Amino acid sequence: MIKQTIISTHDLEIGFPTRGARKSKKVVASEINVALQKGQVVCLLGPNGSGKSTLIRTLSGLHSPLKGSIFLSGKNLSQFSIRQTARKISTVLTDRVTIGNLSVYELVSFGRSPYTGWFGSLTPKDNEIIEWAIESTGIKPFIDRDVMHLSDGERQKVMIARALAQDTSSILLDEPTAHLDLPNRVEIIRLLRKLAHETKKGILLSTHELDLALKAADNLWLINMEGEVFTGTPEDLVLDGTFESVFEQDSFDFDRTTGSFTLHQPTKEIIYLFGDEVAVFWTRRALEREGYRVSQSNGTSLQIEAVHRNGRFEWTLVNDHEEFICTSVGALISRVQKIRQSVDMEG
Image (cartoon, rainbow, N blue to C red; front, side):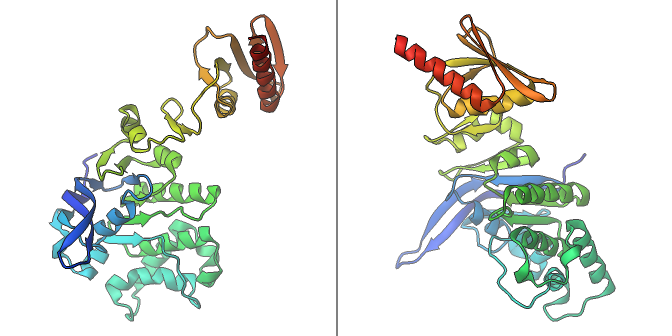
């Protein structure tokens, strides 16, 4: 498929002008060269304070760039009026809707304002697009409710529906899963991916959901605390170490083999773990939480086989020539700890 670029930048520098007698600026990130393609989901990731929100706002025209250029379908953003930009880019920010006495349908309808004006009447075509946005986001069951009476998850879907009603080629979202519980976070990410691939819109979202981003994004934009931006497929950025370096912290480590973060450095002995894939995954998490290193090759004094038998999981722990059967992860951890204590006492 031929890639079609919707938004691109050339040597973009983002930040804020500072007040004072001498003109100066606070640079957040510079030399940004990125491209959002049609039908693509891009997740913008980075530590707190790295400039994710500033980049989203700058790309959408809400902040002026300090230097460099932003292009919409090859044309410089500075050449677009506010209304023209609103017909190209729709933005969903983290700001909560605080307007009362406004129905869901009315809020979604505001997405048509770049075409009708704030007080313009809706045409049959406008109503058709609004209905499509409502159907696409699954909010029809509560379109008559007051926006203030919605849950956080419902409200976020409404804001995405408003962005869809705006009928732009791209949607930029700043932390769309903030304040949501896990099921709603997963649902919103799934919805955005579905919309991008079905409508061929380019969707860029900033998020702290690292695990979900690795699974759902077609591409990642990683921004580090030095203001550098790296782009690529999630797998390439993990394999070449870029992902790990951007989120490098003393308190946790990124495990390339599982695509997840570990909270503690392993300090205890190596355990050979093998068997049922599901059981191994969750057993490994428990062992690493306790500080053990988990190996995928034999040759260790502690060996664990995890199996799924007769509708339940079971673990066989072998230490030297002793063998123990455990029927839960909790019992397994307790047995491993007892073995370690006995070894420490003998030492």
